Image (cartoon, rainbow, N blue to C red; front, side, top):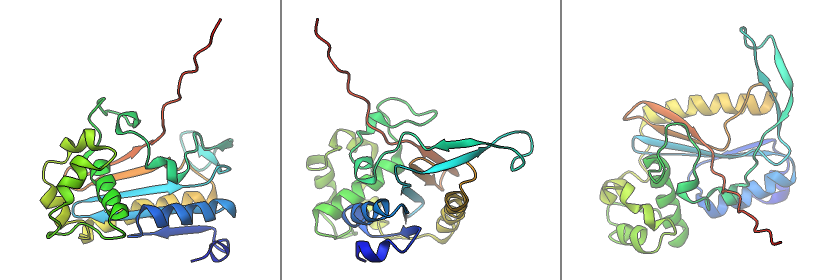
Length: 218
């Protein structure tokens, strides 16, 4: 899909395309004011990453009866471009009830799969990928947190496995997000959704680098 073709769409939702293609499509959508979603399921886990663009605005539902009273127009902040989301150190993730230095297993696993895919020219890990664990521990930029993943063989086996109930749950969540994006009604997720069907929890996290402190002299 060329940038010209993508400019004809308000929303694009993709799966199994990897980080490189996702970055390209998100950048093209941003140029035309569109919104981009990337959704993948692997085994009992699923992840959605979104780039709604730097100018996305919405009205937040408020009051006892939602839908009857909306806030003034708000701008989604902070805005983090998709290509920057992947680069956010795991220690900088913002999520309720997350302990420092213990990033979510779902996000860590997803980043490991995507990073391998990008480094291996579009090849996903598989049960026969004997270099997946070595890649994560030695080459992956987030290797300091590789210990979050305890079984690389199991993760490689489910890299392309889509379990129907997991897809259905995450698909329902994404349907709601797309409706909010189209209508501008309701606060959208910003900028990652994580689903772990084993504990039945769907979490929202914000991937955003910490602001660097500026040293002032004098």
